[in-house]
Image 1 (cartoon, rainbow, N blue to C red):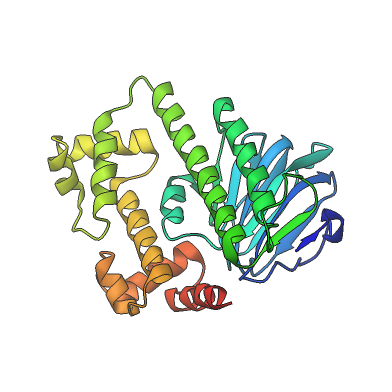
Image 2 (image 1 turned 135 degrees about the horizontal axis):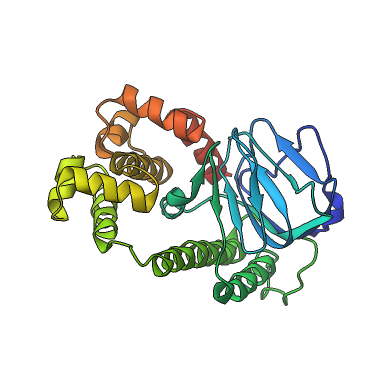
Amino acid sequence: MTGTSAHLPETAADTPSPPAQLLVASPFSQPADYRVTRAAGAANWLLMWTAEGRGQVRGSGPWVAQRPGDLAVLPAHRRHAYRTDPSVRSWGGWWVHFQPRAAWPAWLRDHGRDGGVYCVAGVPEAARGRVDAAFRRLHADARWSEEAPPAQDPAGIAIASAGPGRELALGAIEEVLLLATGSTAAAGRAASASYDPRMGQADAIIAADPGGPHTVRSLARQVALSPSRFAHLYAEQTGRTPMQAVRAARLGHAQQLLDATDLDIAHVARSSGFASPFHFSRAFREHFGVPPSVYRAGTSEGRRR
């Protein structure tokens, strides 16, 4: 199925989003007055790559600038808006509506912004060519119907609902996310002469067992630092406290379990390190905007379709 970007509204009080079961991709080039608002969010996740001009995105918090080389990801079922930056004449790049694979939210958790959006800022120039090529392949693969995928033609809307084309398109999204998050992390470490590898070791310990009984003291012991020194260094070099990192990892793990398993909410809470289902549900709602039961119902419906 194909269409053209001319079929999309340029401004709307509350713009509809594609159905949850569809993967929809398109290049975009929008003028100065372009703006989209969705008070209840979209039925699926939305990824936006800025290639030229400037834009802005937001969740329930402040506007976040989008410049060439920036990647924004807006989770499903959460209020969001985006627009061309009022100070420029245009904004262009790629957008994709999709349902994420289970591992993807964990890759984005270090790029969360106030209001529930993710922004990977400043993807290095060396990676941008591969990102653009991945979007072009994604767009072609999403138009695969019964025969071989069509030649790359970056124009109009491409829609995939099932089959090899959709899986290949998801693979291209995965490549984009890995290129963006991996290259910015490497660039950040290289730019910081004072980066302490023990902070990366602590992150690896948390990621390996998000539901484990982590404390500042236990993490400090495993990287051979005093608790006070570890807490200070970790906050200084990562911009958040160790326990904020643990909480984010637990929520990401819980999200993966909700996406990929039929475990009941209490089991998901225990497996993710939360003291009780009540505590888990409150934390999940604060972070994702909906209770875990509502989140699971939405993603399950998208998979059934």
